[in-house]
Every structure is written in C-alpha cells, then in structure tokens.
Image (cartoon, rainbow, N blue to C red; front, side, top):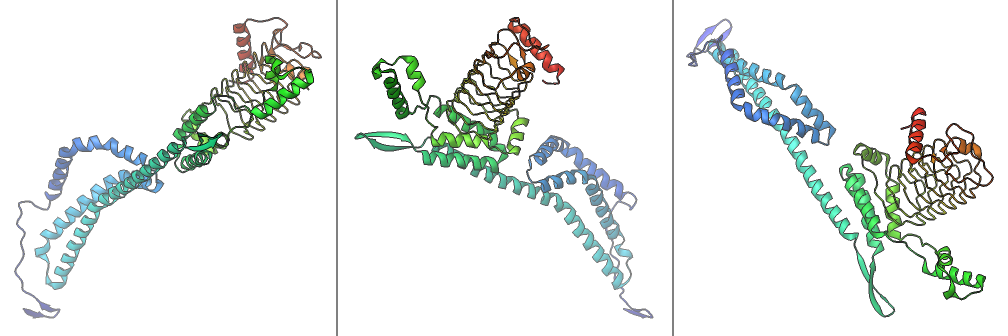
Length: 448
C-alpha cells in the first residue's frame, strides 16, 4: 500500500477476463447469437404469433388488452434494450481491470450489478405480462364454469312440477313459483354475461313455444256465456250450434310463468337488442298461443310469430317493426300506437282490433281481415292491401287509404269509394304484378 497526496492506493493484482473476442466484435457476436436463437425458435414463434393475437382479442378486460397490444408494439424496443444491456455488461467486464482505486472499482461493481438487475427486469417483464393474462384466463374459466352451472340449474328448474290432490286424485301440475324463479335467474345471467344472452333468449322462446302451444280456455266464463246465449235464444244448452259456441269461447289470461317469460323477452335492454342485431338473431315464437298476453311497450321488432294466437292481447306502444305475423290471430287486440312498420300481416285476423294511432307504414296486409277494427289516426302509407277485408272498419277514410297500394280485390267499408290514387286500381291484378308494383312504389319512396 502506497501513500500519495490523494490518499491511499491499494496495489492489487489486475483482474483479466480471458476472452478471444475484442470489444469491436462483441456486438456482432451478440447479434449473431440472438439471430441464431430466433432462427431456432422461428417455427414455434410463427405458429404462436396468430394465437397471441387471438389471445389478446379474447381478453375481456380492456386494460389487459391494451397491455397486450402495447407489448407487441414495443417488443423491438425491448429486444434492443436487452442487447444494449448485454453489451454494457460486456464492456464493463472487460474494462474492470482498468479501474484504479477502490472508488473506481466500487462504481464498476455497482454498474455491473445495476445492469444485471436491469437485465433480470427486462427478461421477467414478458413473464409478468403472460402471468397476468393466464391469471385472467383462469378467472374467466372459473366464471364461465360457474355461469354454466347456474344456467344448467335454471334450465332444470324450468320443468319443475308439484303434486296436488284434486277430487281425491293425485295429480301433477307445473310449479309456477320455481319456474318463474328460474326464468328470472336466466334473465339475470343474460344481463351479467352478454355472450350467453342469445342462448338464454332462445331457451326462453323454446319454453314459451312448448308451454303455450294450445289455447288456454277459461272454462267457467265460456260455460256461463253459453248458458246466457241459450237463454237468449230460448233453446237448450245442448242445442247450441258450433258458431254459437265459438262466439261464447273465452280465452283465459296466460299462466304466470308464460306471462313472466313474455315480459322478459319484451323488456330486453338496448345493448342486448344491438347484440342480437349484430348476430342476426330474431325471436322465434311461431305458433304460440298468447291470448290476452300483456306486451305493452314490448320490443318485438323482427320477431317471427307466424300462426300465433294473440287474441285480446295488449300490445300498446309495442315495437313490432318488421315482425312476421303471417296468418296470426289478433282479434280484439289492443294495438294503440303500436309500431308495425313493414310488418308482415298477410292472412292475419284483426277483427275488432284497436289500431288507434298505430303505424302500419309499408306493411304487407294482403288477405288480412279488419272487420269492425278501429283505424282512428292510423298510418297506412305504402301498405299493400290486396284481398284485404275492411268490412265495417271504423274511423277509416279515403285519405288514409290513398297512401296505400291496392286493387279491386280489396273489400272497403260501405261508405268509402275506391281511392283515386296512382297506387290504386279498380282492376284485380295478378299477385305477381301487384307485389311488383308495391315493391316499386316502396323503392321510389326510399323504403327497402
């Protein structure tokens, strides 16, 4: 140890790191090594590249998705930093022998330790990101498993029955309380999990089709009307003919579970409806018997309800835009302010229906029956009325019919003459020619 004016200087032997490389060739050697590793792993990297993109797309959390895409974008910078740290460690190692004094050696050691720590941090960063994604995937898998179990349990409860005693006989009947609970549970799951919304909606539609596939008759009210009719006609109850019995037929309100299922379908949220439109999904309720159902303010746009029975139904302010109601029965239905724009009502029966302020803009009304229906302020522009029966229709005027497309086959009320309009003719046109005319008129008006 020597003493100088600057202090004490330790006379230590020089540390020499054996190497065959020079400082000028080290960067090229590291670059060649990295390139070799990429060539070795290229098949695996290439195969997993698309999987990584799909993995980021499937991630539901926006923050993780952003982190994933950012990691791809900054990956060249990450590789460059690793290369720079390796090179710095190498340069510090080969210059270690040139350090003079304790202070210089300490800074060399600290610099090497800092660079090693930086290297560890850079190498662990992808592992931390992938661990976050895998943790999110495991969490999502657990949630999906939980939702699947809840859906399975709810669907099982849709068939719940209970045993009751009637007339000293043991009978089984639907357990309405359990079934309604299952329906509301499915609705809640559909709101919490958008990806399960459409399958759940399909399940509810199937439940209605299976449980409302026959008329629900109010036997007591029907029998009382038959007794009153027999007294009025002064005949025996057994002497009533089929037409008299049909006039006395009274439909009961739907079961509580059917009403609950219909309400759930009618109050779907705007986000759920947008999801259905993006997936081109529509409600399928063909052939259902939902007489006297309460569907006020319901959203049933584009729903398929061919051959459905909706007698006496409450459809006030309902959105039935583009709905298919071919051969449906809506006798005495309340359609106040209902939106039936471009709806398909061919062959439908709307006798005694209330259509006040309803919108039937561009609807297909061929073969439809509107006897005694109320048309106060009803919008009928560009509607197709071929073989349509308006016998005794109330509050229907020539101005309303002038905007429709019709021919001589349409039966008008006794007080209304054939409208004088370019879209009307006294002749009975063939169906092909008539509907070709109707489509051209709609096209000129900017309608589909």
